[in-house]
Image (tube, rainbow, N blue to C red; front, top):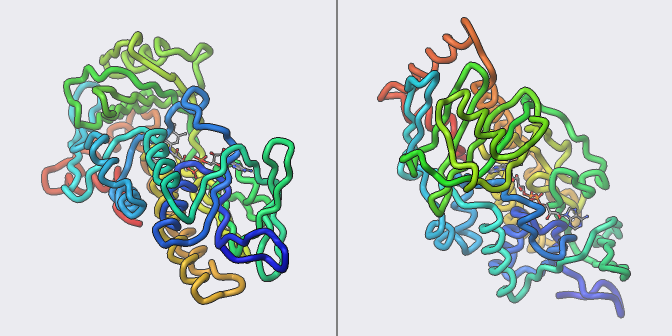
Length: 387
Ligand SMILES: Cc1cc2nc3c(=O)[nH]c(=O)nc-3n(C[C@H](O)[C@H](O)[C@H](O)COP(=O)(O)OP(=O)(O)OC[C@H]3O[C@@H](n4cnc5c(N)ncnc54)[C@H](O)[C@@H]3O)c2cc1C
């Protein structure tokens, strides 16, 4: 740790604002390089009750990022592998998805992955996580930044060479750097709950492309399964029974509502920040892009951002580069985010309510893509294989 001027507070290499899935992973990567960083997180503790696990799907690039952070083996040990998928409509199978061996999706709740990353940071020598600290502003002093924060009643000024906004979809850092939050195509309402898996297909994703809207279900560890259904509007009473009724009326399948936890409704929307960096500050994860959860890419894309940013930060610190070090990061991550929004918008269109010619055309397209020689294509449409 160096000093910010005579008698000043110690200067960090990097301050990461936000200790969610992406900020924690970036902290682990910086620790592996021996860089001096602090992750500031406003929550005092992870709160499973307030935050039912959002992500479960870990795609191949996400798994590589977790391996680089040092938790890949433990994630593999705890996760279930989703080996294949089946697309149906009105009880008939339209196609099967096959994931390449190197490209299988793992399923593990986000909260569990975050706990593993936090444990890793706790054991790190040069990186720490400070909980209960809310960042309120950033001042550029030319040679470095000062990140302003509050810790209870105390005000903190934290000097650093660079700052990273990993503060989620409502990012304050994004506003501070004056970035636009540009909407992208793809918006719809969904309900979701996790329950016991009684499907008899514990390693298979089931995608029901029904006329009234998609119902999807995915394996989870511990013999559980996540159900997600597209709805025109959120049911007046959101409980597991309401979701079970939607699922049963569309697919004929039922699940045990007594074993269900955390019914949730969410509006899937998409935005990309422009720019994703300014001077000594860069955005990562949901602060940089909101990707529809349909297709399950947001967290994985955020981890890929972190892998790229870790390299850029190390190079910038080694070269003592003063400003605008994130130009290449900005260009390449915006391209990746736009690509992810297009893929998610495609997945959402496939699951929209459809009747008549539209339904027949969609079913015919899935049948063609589900032919034995093309199954890999269908698999790739529903997984993220690139960084
Ligand atoms: C229903 C649902 C299902 C999903 N499923 C998947 C999936 O299967 N696969 C996938 O890849 N993605 C999925 N996602 C998306 C995924 O959850 C997000 O992309 C991911 O949480 C983003 O992580 P993050 O660290 O960027 O942001 P967050 O997880 O939102 O973390 C941001 C952190 O910053 C902190 N913070 C905010 N402001 C401040 C401040 N001023 N000072 C200090 N701390 C601050 C917050 O407290 C928070 O802890 C899903 C999302 C939803 C809603």
